[in-house]
Length: 186
Image 1 (cartoon, rainbow, N blue to C red):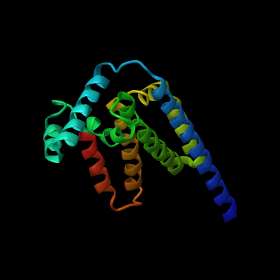
Image 2: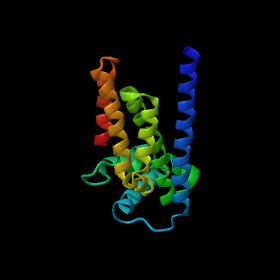
Image 3: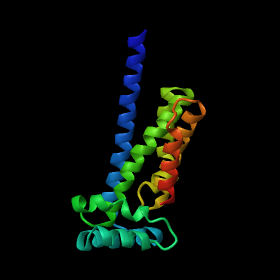
Image 4: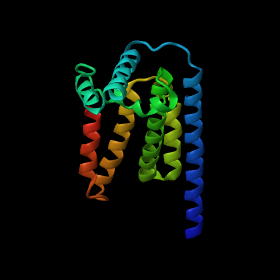
């Protein structure tokens, strides 16, 4: 009996990996082929990201920290800092910044799967990943350089850890929830 349930868990995880890779490939392809210039918020986030990158690479860490603390006015500046590690690898471009969303897609998929598995089983978790990533709004957000996809992913992670905390599974969960809240405020 144990080997059958192990096989089912393995099969579910393989299918989950295939589904996530499919959504990642679709988003990466879209980002590479999209030639429309950024508009509105995307343009502002990209401009601030370039300012932060230039401060870090040309003037050092202290200049970066100063620029980070003054960037984005009254908006949270973390969205502008997230693509910085990708610029040396992919070049300083709008497409490189949007590749941050690939990490958000993986994070959201893993935790929405965990929520579904915790509530109703592995197949439900897999269905939750498929449904989430095929919503038109979510698919569109994954292809733009906006803060909303990352915030959605952090809310999904928050809900997962809140469920674990309420069920009494983990004792460090309040710390994790606090860190997630702190990142959300950045």
